[in-house]
Image 1 (cartoon, rainbow, N blue to C red):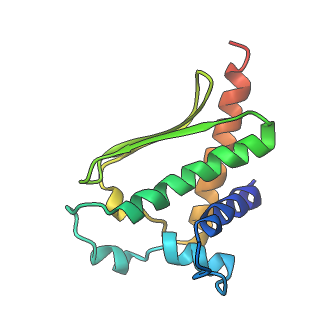
Image 2: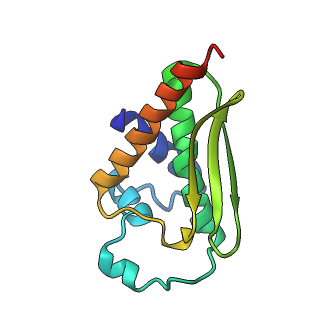
Length: 141
């Protein structure tokens, strides 16, 4: 499921590359640039700051990738709803019908990142597995 999530996320990102800016970057380099930050890099980001639209879009892409990967696994259509204040407080929900497949609350979304590429893979896989388990548990309710 890691591969499905990563391939779907990369597809979402590349679909937004209208001018071919990222065409020469490998998938791993592209994800490293967008989502991986070391502890040292995080120290340079203020604890209290406004979030820009690009960061909001990058967070949304992760959950859109979860939704699309879930659709590929099950054939069931999903939606993503995200609300984020300019200060980085918000929530994202992936749902199908009346079933919430996964959700995440944010307090400081401008600092949202992963330490390693493997952390990104594992988190995506975790969301996807939880979404599938939740759907299987409640689809007949």
